[in-house]
Image 1 (cartoon, one colour):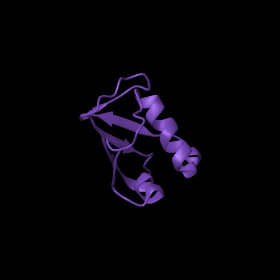
Image 2 (image 1 turned 180 degrees about the horizontal axis):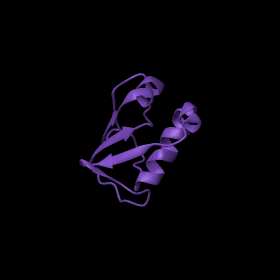
Image 3 (image 1 turned 45 degrees about the vertical axis):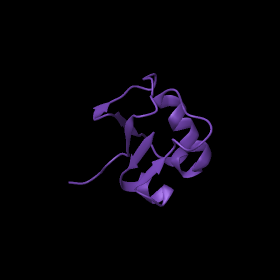
Image 4 (image 1 turned 90 degrees about the vertical axis):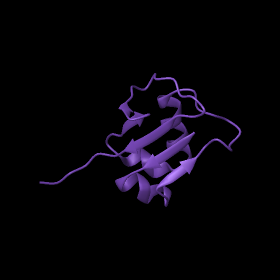
Length: 80
């Protein structure tokens, strides 16, 4: 499971991607993945919202995740 991070999410993690395929416990849903990120990187808790895309499509919190999925974490954006 490869996770791509953008904007402030990339800054929080310190990398533009994470590979969870080598970790022992795999999150089964988008909601579980966000919980793992918030536990591992507490600064995620300060973000007002995060969008998550799975295989190029925006995903709901209950969307199931598979081992081979490509996931993008998209933080809130601002600008004019």
